[in-house]
Length: 196
Image (cartoon, rainbow, N blue to C red; front, top):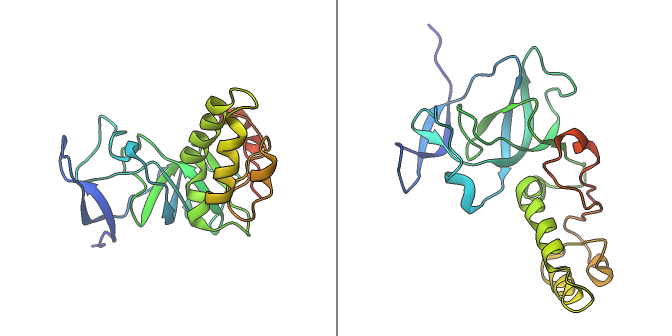
């Protein structure tokens, strides 16, 4: 008789729950088209407890974006292997979300390799929060009036860089966004985001 390994996760204990709890739940198993990832950091947003699959099993770990290390790959997964450092989006996954020690990720999900010089916490913010940042820059780009002011402040206060903001580009550290592509363009995800 084998014992199912347990992990800690922030969960909703029942459908319609308005608060989450820290709980011990089983480590999810993987199917042929999935990876098991040991989570090192999560992106946090208001959306984390809203994107729940209809077939969720409770208690359900919340969260949709994270960064970590691939532990196992399903038999049908190519291009990824144990030990790979990745940032990813795993929303609407019936096996649970990212606010857990382990998470299953579909091989077809948005998965980005993490450069060696980028930490897990910064990488976890890229898939969803990074997309939000790009959309905010586009929304603020109403000409030479306001856009540079926001970019300078963001570059100074948050060390983020955007190619259209020369002063923000001069800031050191953080995540540098080199391309203005939508992060959800799965066909071109290899060219979506340049990290520096």
